[in-house]
Image (cartoon, rainbow, N blue to C red; front, side):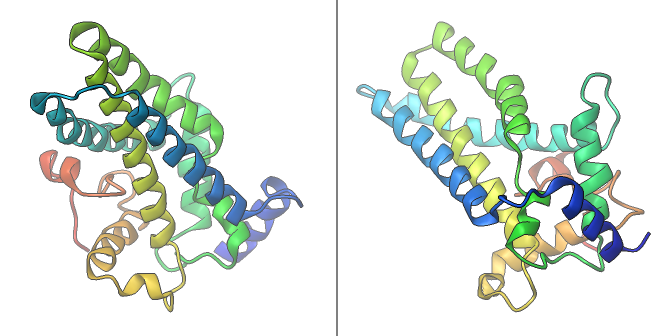
Length: 215
């Protein structure tokens, strides 16, 4: 089945008549920025050492992104088959290395996280750690951890969406974005998608685990 045929079938089956890609992105922005604002509102006299939570949480989020992508989205894990199906079975068929761009905003449905995946990643990688940090250290550290996680999630969604914009998009003029986009395009090569470039954002995990390929 060629890419355009699959895209037509995907749209008919999974993209409802009321779906709006712009509204989906708007929900991501409100969810993330609203959550960050709530977390920052809870902070109280943050000590200097507590601010180290931000870079530590950033690295943790990068590794969670890497591990979740490599071992859940590209491996059929019992109980998590829906995530594997949506990513490897749909996203990687909708977008191939030779057909990476959205045709229109409704195709954002094949890029942005649905609510169920947001619940999964925050439930597995963020909530338990935040609760533990609050018990072991301080409430400030827990809130900073969650705020950084939400910021990282927003960063992930915006970058991933940018990678699938048409070639003439003005956003692709940003030098750092073009470089990261090339790495993601390599990942969409069917012969490499299960073994290379699992970081959607910054290739820290790929560098650490030696799975980075420049293409």
